[in-house]
Length: 284
Image (cartoon, rainbow, N blue to C red; front, top):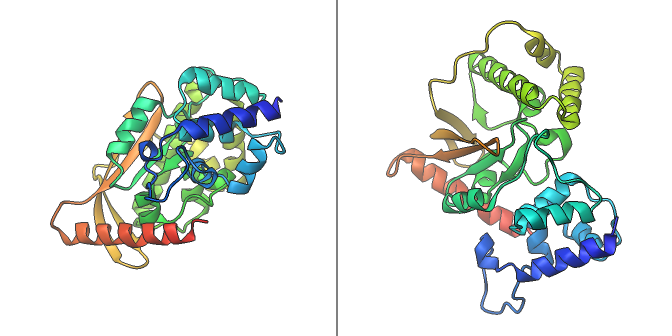
């Protein structure tokens, strides 16, 4: 890998990104015209120390996930993204691989929704990005690594989420997720990462293996788009939960909102304020 060239390109592209264009507050005393290193690291979900080593050529094996996260945070064009992959020693993902690309046009849509909790998953239900209001509502996602970033794994093997389900609702939700993952596997049979995900889930969860092999039809889509969220500080609230499908890029964008003027809206607003303040306080 051309590690020095990879780092040089990332530094140059970091310097050209206007902070306000990616939602980074600009203070009066700011001297840097582009993004600071810790700001890019935060946007990409990696540590500032790791980004420093990448830019200095001391870290030479960034994963494809890290490259994609940097490309997204830097708002790269398709040709620039492909170049970053090549400099990292990877081939840019082809049509036979589950995409995790957030295009500039989709990013502009997400920017318009920045006041709402928003989370984006790829077709395997692996987290692509979550905004600050989502982390404030549901808990910090920046520490999730590996399988922790997959919603199927989290629902089956990590029962610590804040969405409240009855046992029946949880069982139907799990069945829908696994059925959707099975459809994804049929669309991307050559994706080795997807095959590895299915194997890891089957090895770890008998419930997943049972659902994966089941010949029963999946449950009908959830007739209710409303979710009960139990926040540890502000308590329970009932929110509208809308999932938007980006067809060509095969992404799932889930947006949480509440009817203005209701108690749920007040609790949601308070949770976002408290949570984003906490996230800022913890940012180095």
